[in-house]
Image 1 (tube, rainbow, N blue to C red):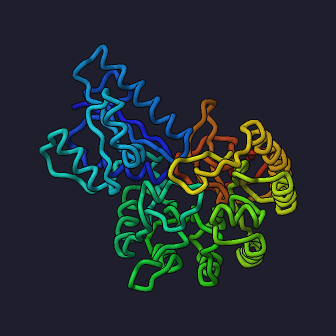
Image 2: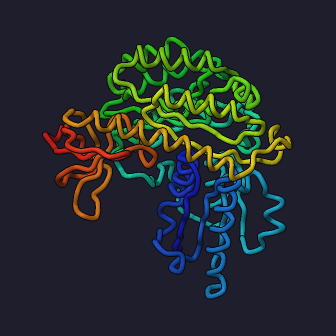
Image 3: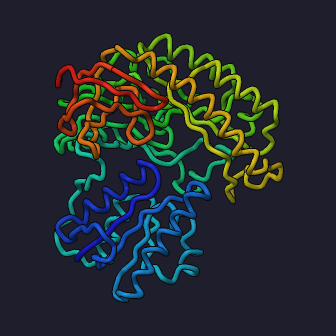
Length: 428
């Protein structure tokens, strides 16, 4: 049986698809084009309206192949059927089966049953990332209940994975070639608050530090309200934990933050950023912001604009607010016009471009470590520094070829807004 798959959404979604595909290994041959397939599988995202639209368009595009191949099976999993299964079943008759279980292991078993796979299931993930890095989920679901967010509707309440299970999967990923582990959850900093074992995120980092052959550990999706002293000390003190913190603050106006239900305020965020920068050497902070939230006034945006310019985040992304049904903010009528949202997003990104360019120019002449992610079209190695996460942050273009997955010491020779160029000093 030949299968074509599409992965949409965040790294957590990718982990789910890797789990499903892993269970199918030995029963399925994967193909590169849908016209070659007997089965197509779409793992969907439904976080915001744009993601839902992309998911629906992808499903319909693949289902169109049934015109030439009526026996083609179209399967849909992930966030979209988890959120809208009944509506989808009525409206998308082109789809042969929807799988809406939140647990990827259960979904994998259901897909196996549907496809009548007879061989023994494998618990090994079919990796979609390059071999040298892997995402490692430490928890799922969310209890934060931000007023704009649909994640609790899709994934349910927060539940941490047992620490031994996390370590065992990390060891398996390392045996499969991973040298960088990227920790993900809806909120990694909430890890362990639901466990009786009194284990928190810093215990996870300490345990992963002991996993042989891991070189970099990267912390994603932290919440500013849930950092605590032991975690800061651990990130600062462990050699394998890279000096990179993903800290989505979403806004800086305390009035808007309160309306968002973020359980923090400007004063706390500023103190946290100061403490992180003071205690973690050579730190890069990535943050994300939402503009156009209902009721965001001109003065709120001016406050945010001034804060972005003054704080000079190492990495920053800006999203426009997406109104989501069945969320608290989704029922509010004080909407910001789309044109205003787009203008505010563009203004912040213009400020950040100047900051990024200045920071990158300061890297010229500096030596630092990178990992090679791919070989570009012109034969140059494309790498990342310790301060950059895959696919969302800056890249380092090297002046010669190097093996994918190799770690190297390089010296920066040139810079632009989002990329560096560097000379390879030595492979390490």
